[in-house]
Amino acid sequence: MSTPVRVRFAPSPTGHLHIGGARTAIYNWALARHLGGTFVLRIDDTDPERSTDENVLAILRGLRWLGLDWDEGPEADGAFGPYFQTQRADTYLAALKTMKAAGRAYPCFCTTEQLEVKRDAMRAKGGYAGYDRTCRAIDPATAAARVAAGEPHVWRLSVPEGRTEVAFDDAIRGHMSFPADALDDFVLVRTDGTPTYNYATVVDDALMEISHVVRGDDHLSNTPRQILVFEALGHEVPIFAHLPMILGADGKRLSKRHGATSVEAYRDEGYLPEAVLNYLALLGWSLDGETTMITRDMLRESFSLDRVSSNPAILDTDKLDWMNGVYIRELGVDGFVERMTPLLVEAGLTTVEEAAAKRAWMLKLAPLVSERIKRLDEIVPMVRFLFVEDLEIDPTAFAKVLKAGNAAEVLTAARGLLAAIPAFETTPIEEALRALPEQLGVKAKVVFQAVRVAVTGTTVSPPLFESLELLGREKSLARLDAAAAGVDEAAPRP
RNA sequence: GGCCCGUUCGUCUAGCGGUUAGGACACCGCCCUCUCAAGGCGGAGAUCACGGGUUCGAAUCCCGUACGGGCUACCA
Image (cartoon, rainbow, N blue to C red; front, top):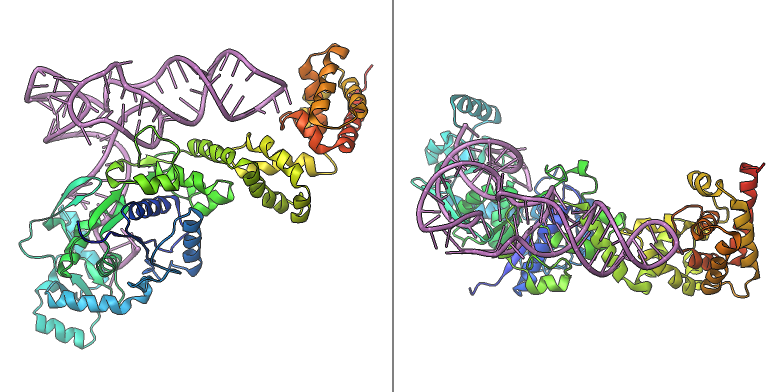
């Protein structure tokens, strides 16, 4: 194949970059990079009602967050621009001239109401096979005169007479064939002169010399229509590849009901871009059926359309969570501190300056946390006890651990030992507390859980001895005192 | 209604005529262990949607049926 590889991702800015779109973008990007081609980003904003500039920006942000770079498009230039469909009105008009000259477009004067009546009638009778082509029968000279006179009209594609089928080979699903009589003389240009999606997208794909059209399954049925336009334009038909849909946990089309659907929502919930990219890449594509961890570079090296699955996939957040945890652990202490700091600042637990000053301390904290979370938004609740002045003890934990047995005695004894050790560090702390159970004749667990609740406020926390060191002697002792006192108050012993 | 697509453990998938149907997540058990995780080891889980063919042999090829989905707009 000698034609250069050019692929495009063409989102409609009617919303943010959602999961399905992101995967389409990833596959397009990966294909372009793998084949040494060009990745074009085009904004299909032909729907002025729902398209917004903010959405365009959000889409660009989302793509960049995933680490996908485009060679042509908004904020990237390119020789085939502009890359916003709303800026290409003259292009579509010019292409319409080509269509007319080829005898493949004609004006239609039917009103929306008339069309509805026809449709209803045909459906009632049985099969509906598209527009009945009334206006196609109008003598061209007459039609031209009516157009010149300013009569409202749309321009329709003229499906070639005698054509029996439109066929193509989909790179994912194989040979596709559609009977031509099921194809409509669909609208190319609306009454107001704006192009429809199926028309604009073909004009652009043709003019931008797109070699591979990789897009969602929902466009599969539109493809034969679009091929007819490519032909009418006298342009070579690109290779098509239709991706299966991504569904929600209930097997239904992904929507807001299924929780986060925009890529940026995942970012805000504490997912790492590497994890989202990895997960999405493998949702519908596989390297070998064994590999579960895959990087952007690996994708670039090995992506191919023939290993894209053809059946729809359900988004499984459990697996995404697991994968995110793996990437969090791969961050390393420095990387994790970098991720953690802004979240702590945002939560008001510290300041940028303070965090920088306590860098050694932060580096000690990092592995204790990174090992036990799946999402970054779990950090703040887990480490809050280290930052606050007044600790609130979880009532359930209090009732279960501190109210039971001789907690006050345990806490007081622990306090005494911890006050006496020379250096308030993990190892001596552990040595001191490990001696306690035997001294008091209780199980180790009783001691550790009592101290844990007193110091962290909950029964579940990062490792105890490390936590004590990080908290510091002063605060630790104060909390043990406070808890011991609280126990006496709440549960006076006979 | 018409046209088109899809159907392998709960989920994502491997498989492309001969396999004990493999892997991952989730689940269960054991080990490790100060809680929770992480990690290690092991287990359970798929009559390959169903029914017919073709073949010595079918998850793999063909045809039907069912179920799910898409398109059928002057939405994209």
